[in-house]
Length: 151
DNA sequence: GCCAACGTTGGC
DNA sequence: GCCAACGTTGGC
Image (cartoon, rainbow, N blue to C red; front, side, top):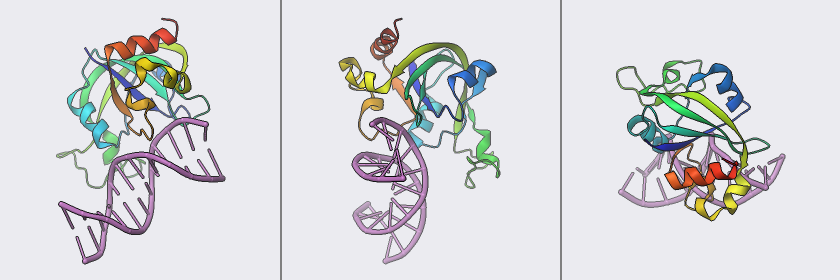
């Protein structure tokens, strides 16, 4: 079982949205490094930190689990979608997604606080210029982050 | 809104 | 295959 961190913009899709939907596909990842992880490494049963980016309070907002592994991201085939990719076909999809299930909220673990934690120094998240929106989390990092939320 | 960092594109 | 131009991300 592996741990991950998924970024989302809460104005579009937040931990609250996921709680309401209970299970949701994680569409719209259009970064090759992230795509490769969704396609090859993220498995059913893996646990995921839900991270809110590009908002007033950036940080980890909750926890989810993976309930369906890789399958083609349908938005790449939809011309009206902002995620449409004209080079993708159903026979040769370029982008993949997984489904996640809501587990729980956590008291917001702010990015600024995570940057202060030496145990998290190696996370891509806290490094300068980081743009990766799906990233692996080690067991030690996972525990260190949740410890910051009092768990 | 600003701007640094980074990824992608496309000409050569 | 290189690299400049451009667009996007994302924290502040």
